[in-house]
Image (cartoon, rainbow, N blue to C red; front, side):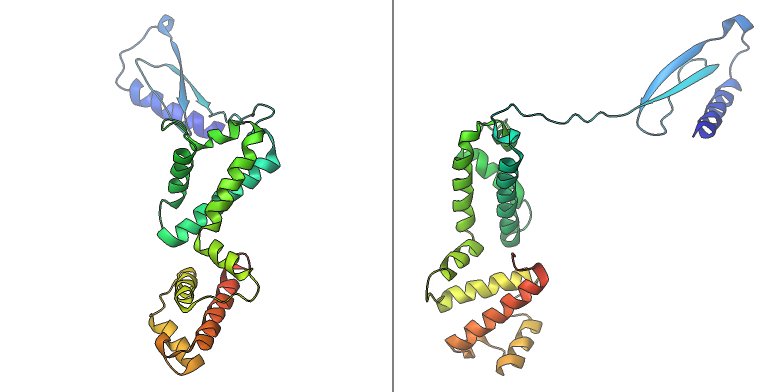
Length: 224
């Protein structure tokens, strides 16, 4: 690194020295300049000696006031993971900007000023954590995944055919395909001898949706 810097300094001095007017020995000047970044060179005026200096950006770790949500790592991590999960579920359904929408939703529902980031919740007193968790649990429970999970926990509960259509579409979205795509139709034909869902009775359609679920688990894991 030292040899490279000396080489660059020599080239700069030669470049400007070729066109510079002769100087007396007493006219020697030294100029110091600071450059932010890697490999930057700054030159000004008549130069004899050039001192190059690089400065690095200092990252300061945020420290939260004791008693705030942010000051309790386990509490902050739980809320943060719920927010991330909500953003992930929205992203699967609506695509881009899902996480930004979740942040805007938090700000609106909790009255956080527009010019303040939603992450200001980490500065709230720890007693408000339960309020945030209840809010996020309700939002997660209202997603497609949440409604399916809630329904499946009821003894003997069976999804209606209309609900199965929604679940099928959701699973297909997770697999990156459409319910009426060629590959999906071919798979239905292999399993039931028909490409149309309309030709499946309720029991066959449930088996079909369960099969799609097993494929989703293979791709995304059991906690998809």
